[in-house]
Length: 205
Image (cartoon, rainbow, N blue to C red; front, side):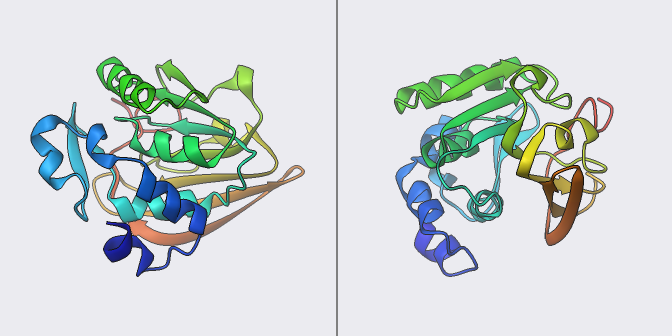
């Protein structure tokens, strides 16, 4: 997967490549889908959600520019694969999932890997996790109509927010927001297709 789908494209961060070699993706998909766990496309995980394409996981993780010491907020735990990749790359991960059944699956899978630096919350991810803010990095794994204001406000100085933005029924674009003091700069990169962010800062359910 890493050699054919990721390393041969524009992913050059060796730490990201190593993390994706070492995190077993198949334990984060339903048993009936494990034959396609490492394929170059998203895989359904139930409840209308998917585990993102491996390349997209790598691209968004690389966009965070992780050094290993950051406090990260993830919105949209899903089955926990992206969470696990973040976990091995940084100091702490706070992750929010609105669907209780998926949150439970993710917590079990991450626990089975012995990862102990992940903190879970079930509920609307749009408000972020204000009592734990600020965060050095924030990753959103669902499409928002615009950069969520509440999440942007929880960035630490020199923090980075990565979020898919656009109409969830069509394609979107990955937006990277960087905070410098009280100023925010944003940059668009590649096109993508994510399920919608539901709740505050997202789309109505």
